[in-house]
Length: 475
Image: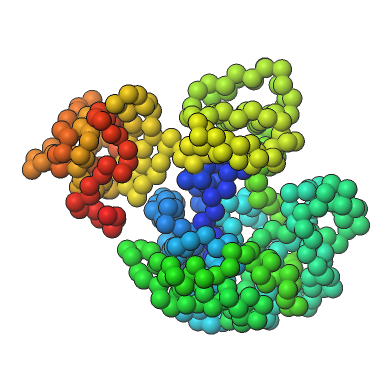
C-alpha cells in the first residue's frame, strides 16, 4: 500500500431506534453503550494507526459539531477536518462532498474509507485483512463495499450476492438485495454466497466522483459546488448551504452502488453490527450466566436473556425473559427484545403527541463545546441543572434578561466573572448572578468542573442568552 487511506466518518444521523437513550439531539453515535467509549470514538480509534491511515475526516451537522470535536479530543485523536452539512441530504451527498474535499486536500487519486460512526466493529486481523484487500481493489478502479459473513437470517440488514472472485481477493457484486422477510433471509443463508451489506466503502476519490457524475449527476454537482464555495469557521468547514441543498436526498447505495457495473465486494468475517435495535446491543454485551446484559444500577431476580440499562434510578426486574428495560433520566422503555426493531414506530407515536414530543427530541443531558449540562428539576419559575465544564474551557461572557442564577461548586475549581469582578470558587462555595448582570464561568483546573445551577425567573428558556464574547463563534 503506497499511500495512506483517508478515513471518512459519517456522523450526522439523528436516529431514534435506541430510544430513550438516543434522541434527535443525542444520536446513538455519541452515546456510550458498551465499553468505555462512544460508538463515534470507537470508530475513530479503529482508524488511528498512522502507518495505515491519515487523520480522519468527519462529516456531521451543525448541531453535533462541537460534540464530534470534543469526543475526538477526549481520546487524543487529531482530525483532517470536520465538514458541516447545512441540511440533511443522506449519504450520497455526504460521500460526494467528502470525496471532493479529500481530492482537494490530498489529491485526486487518494483512497477514502467511508465508515458510519454508529456501527460496532471488532477490529482484529480479519478487519485489517479486509481493509488491505479493499485498498488494493479500490486502487485498481473498483468501487468497493464490505460484505459481512452472515451468522443468522437477519431481516434488519440488506444483503449482497457475491459474484466471481477478483485477483485482489475481492469479488464482483452480482446484485444488492433489499432487507428481506425472514423466509427469504433463511433461503439466502442456506444457499450461501450472500453477505450482509455493511454500509462500509472504499473508493478512489476521482473514480467515485466520476461515477457519481455518470449515475447521479445532481448529487455530484451539488456536492462539488458546496465544497468549492465552502467557508472555514474555527476548526470546521461549512459546506455552501445553497449548493448542498440542491442535492437529491438519496443514499449512496441507491444513487451509485446499485447502478454501477464497477462494484466489488470484500467478503469479511469480522464481527459487525449496525446496532439498530436493543436486541443488537444485547447480542454485543457481556452476558451473565442467565444470559442477561446489565448496565448501571440494576437488580435482577429470576430474569434471563434480558437487557437492563439504567442511567438514573435503580432498576429492579423480576420474573422476565427476553426483555429490554432501558431507563434514561426522564423516560423508561420496556419491551420484548425480539420486537425491539419496532421501537421507531413507538417513537413516532410519542413524537405525534404534544405531551410526549419533547421526549423524542431533547435529552436531559445536553453537550456544549465547553462541556454540557443535565436538567435535574423543572418547576414553576425555577430550574436546577448540573453543569460540567471541561478542564481549560470557559462559557461565553453572557447575560440573561429574564432570570437570575445561583452557582454552587461541587467539584473542582471555578473562575467566575460577575460584572467587573473575577473570583475563584472552590468546592462547597457559591455565588449569585443577578438578572441582567454580565457573567462568565471558566474552569482553570485540570479536572472537570461540576457546578449546581439554580435558575429563578419568569422565563428559563435556553434562548434567553445574550452572548457578549464567545470563543466558539456562537452569536
